[in-house]
Length: 413
Image (cartoon, rainbow, N blue to C red; front, side, top):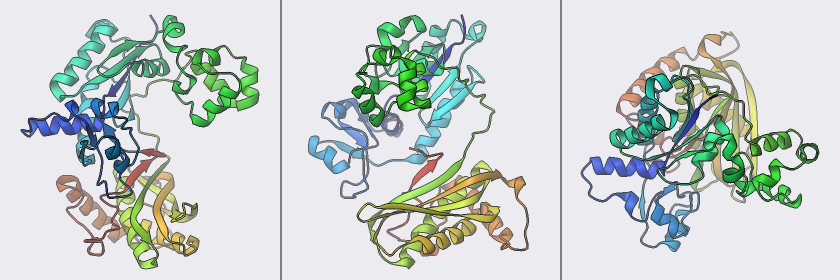
């Protein structure tokens, strides 16, 4: 037998984690057994459905739709606010449990991970028995269910876990591809998006099997390198390895954005939003041990026009005030005076702190960095709202608690 890869995916993660906490706190109603969803205030135009129960799904409620629309489909839908601190803790608990079975674990998102089980049979038994044991332990010790897909590579393991939900253990080995994978719509293949699906349909490709058997040279002519990758995936080919749990994350950018409750038309108010965003971005930079050499600001106008402007900084920075001052400079240069619906800050060209160089041309942020370090410790211990800048107290535009965090263009749910 060659490699054995598990893909572990939490079922309705946010809803499940919230339900478990409520039950542990003495609530007698399990949110997973009623039409329920994790969402925000239905009167807030930014509010969307982040997760939903199986019963909510039967009413047509879908992840990502506005909360108001979901309530129209299911008026008795129970909407519960999100708790990202809880989600992070639940994710860490699951990763800690998985690490008992292998040192080769790659966290793919907050609620899913790959585990390389190759060579672990002598310790934990045959793969399917070990996978079932992991499922049982997660439910018994952590209180929620997962899907586990099992195969010889990451792609097939992930696709296996998507075949049927929830609370399933499913295999998808190469000899099962024709019967389990190929009949599926091509849109269900990993990395095939809506636009690619439409282009594939114009070529007569409607199933994954159609794609697998389509001439490769014609796919490459139409899609370039993407065509080769899609063809390989359709045939179950994936040679990527599972990262060692000790390997550092390859983070290329850290950003934060927020859609505003009301359009901002005042420069001072926009600066307050940027300060709030800078708090989150800089704290994440410091948490990962990175400094940024580029600051970008994204502006979405009231009529949904989107534009971004960026600048290189002389020395790599991770200080909140440094991020803010540079973001403010970029904003003042880029903003055209239109009403603003969304603001975002992105830091890129990251380097580790020991790569910083001093320069007589740049401001000394050392005192600010000491203050940041002290505040980070307090916030990590007592919560992010323990210390709030006076200028942000009672601010409706405060994004520090309500912004959307993005690392490498992935939303941290």
